[in-house]
Length: 416
Image 1 (cartoon, helix red, strand yellow):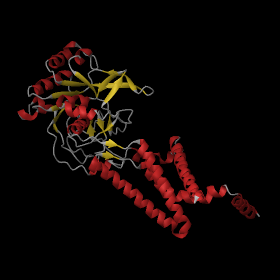
Image 2 (tube, one colour; image 1 turned 90 degrees about the vertical axis):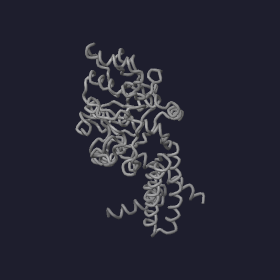
Image 3 (cartoon, rainbow, N blue to C red; image 1 turned 30 degrees about the vertical axis):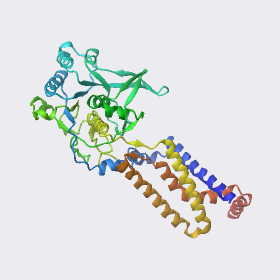
Image 4 (cartoon, rainbow, N blue to C red; image 1 turned 45 degrees about the vertical axis):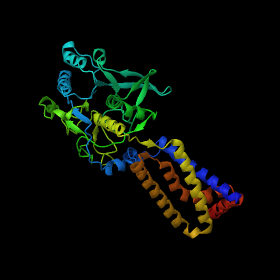
């Protein structure tokens, strides 16, 4: 029995060794041939299916109104704000960088409107992240004479993209960040705090460095997104023509942002992201959501008190170790008792385990807003059956003097 337990532990270590070897191979890109396949699945998570295929909430969020600023100059944006504030919104968010210096004539209209509007938040951008000290070195703010007239919130969203043209997959955001020792809040957090401070403080009390975006919907159904019209959106001309009812903005959160040259424009890449709501959740073809709409989704999850909890790395590792030991223990029994049935039994068992964990991941997110990650456990399960055969057929034999002799004996007979 002691030998059985010892072999179970050693075989489990062998499996984790194989995983480490494959991770190293991937790291050094030994298998560049398979990079296109890897790229296709690199932006995919199993839980994306929940947002892409199972988000069936048809009710629009009437607390938020989206306004497209298109390619308007600052004078045009000023005119939009001037019209909107006449209808008494709770707070206005301007998701646009105003850091480029312009002449006083070009800025005068916007400066005047900002000075007359108390409830406005303008976007800033955090840059130069210091990995060692875990904070940003500085922030790109609007010009000082504009920034002094409003609250600021950073518009950074978490992606792996380096340029606007890269695949910008956004699943997470940070509620707050340190900038050279000063605490800064995210743009949607600033907006939702002005609307409902109690719910915002409850959300911030979770004290998570990173939060998962609980996506609710879009402004329209883009060709690559299944669900749309969660948020009512007005285009540039709708504001200037006042093509809306007077009560549309009353006590609402208004997000003014770029949503294409016109609403429905999918040719642009500016501030246009991939999200888990993309219907093509593997090998995504087209962006599906603008940054301002992602901010709206964040606001909705705060107001609805529907944050998503994530499984910690320690739990993921513990589950992987458990499934490894359990499968090796069970499969070694089958290996010794039913050698002829081994491959069939283990493959069926592995398939049931993987499908069960995949189903559980989807169920936990749907029912409890809990994002479990069983990826490590699934890899261990997939490797466990064949690894036991390799362990006993190669590793154990290599440490046996008698069995090593068999190899040399066969080798001498072959060359004769």
